[in-house]
Length: 179
Image (cartoon, rainbow, N blue to C red; front, side):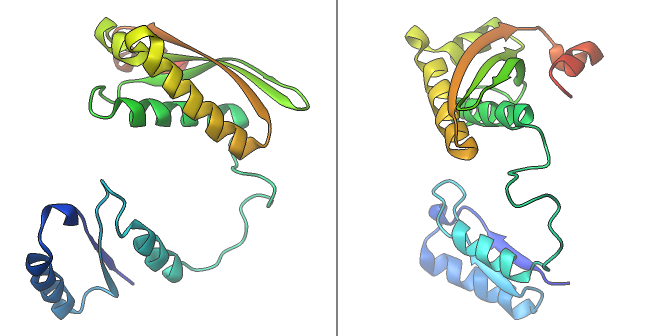
């Protein structure tokens, strides 16, 4: 089976120290490719994707070409908003946030969405909203722009933040969040 070695955090090591590490792994003969990357800056990630893609077998299409996913648009919207929450808040929030699509209306040229970001603590709600609502606005803008690009329609997105203490620990809380 083909194996590719990705060496991460190359932004933290000098080139003269990295090269002997690459040579040592290369000498094992275990890897078809060795790709130094920095996940933080994105250096080398395109090459890694290209190395992986070149080795994947071609298979049948799992859904029609005009579909983005085999999941419904509501799910896609939920995941895009959650991604923006994680990217915008970086290390500030644990991954104990969920996005619930409260209302979804698709029209010919517009999709209207109401979504609630669920967190466990009042302090997390403050981080999500941000000073004068700036963080929530940033999350909403980035999510709306990506959804418009993906779906080819205007998106009207309303975001709310709700505290549901320990929602991750109850079956009902997990079910409400779509898990």
